[in-house]
Length: 400
Image (cartoon, rainbow, N blue to C red; front, side):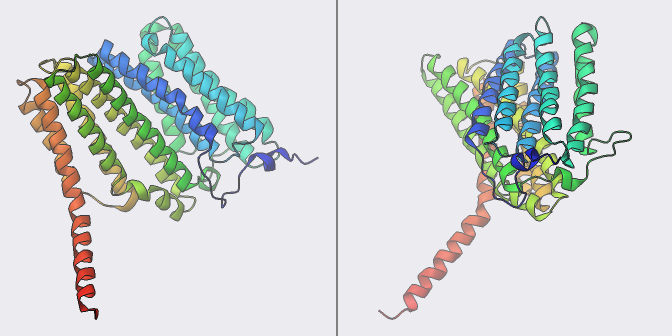
């Protein structure tokens, strides 16, 4: 007897796909996770603390990314998909709640929720896809998540090896996605099996990046409100706002709006670009997170000369710009020279101001970002001016 359920769950690849309310609701868990991660950086800004935060961010991002990729294939109105997204959302909230002590007393909650999310997804989708070719894809993914899940759980049981095992598990998972989840006797997924709707996934990337920028503005605003609203804090808050606007502009222009079209135009192999964009968005969000913490520290104490603030204030924007340059290169082969120069400029200028109050460092970094935005926008301004001059000239030639 034929199983009709896959036909009711799956969306046709050629159908237009917009983000559903449920997907946006699911993103609320990521908002909570970012707030917990930024608190973890503030509490422990050491190199080891930063490494642990990066491991947790990579795990939480992988939950979001795999879920967004999976949801692209299914009708979000289907009851099973509603249950799946709510299951993942609740697991994500548990992971976020455990972030402050994920490498200590609540490692079991963080890792257990992570493993349960991925195995639960397979437990729901594999039976539902019975008789459909995509069932094999879900089976391969679930098997590998079971294997990596063992590494997560062993890391819980063996604290000295926790950081190493969790890192290796993430490297395995991220690598297997690029290799199309190969498994002995089951083969590997084809690119058509992994094909996504470029416009939909690109829209999801933009939405989650806006959430990361929202976290920057939120905590900058909270820090400013609690600072006494004096002049130096006001200046630091203004710099945080300028930095957020510059990051938003640099994200969207020039290739950000063309990502979806590029994925779609490439056909099934466009999944490689979609996956690479996922990896690069992790780095961009990490850069925004570091920038957010640095701006918060500056607003709270504009005269501070704390090394952690300097490191975060330089690393965050430089990491964002580097990932953004690579994304532009992947999308259309462009190598925007202003951004290429901007990365070393941020690093050099940042260290050149290390003996000054860090509000000065924030001003220099914000200035470099704004300068890149202006240089990026010059070709567009010239085209606009030329068009305006042509239109004006044609209006003058018209008989009155």
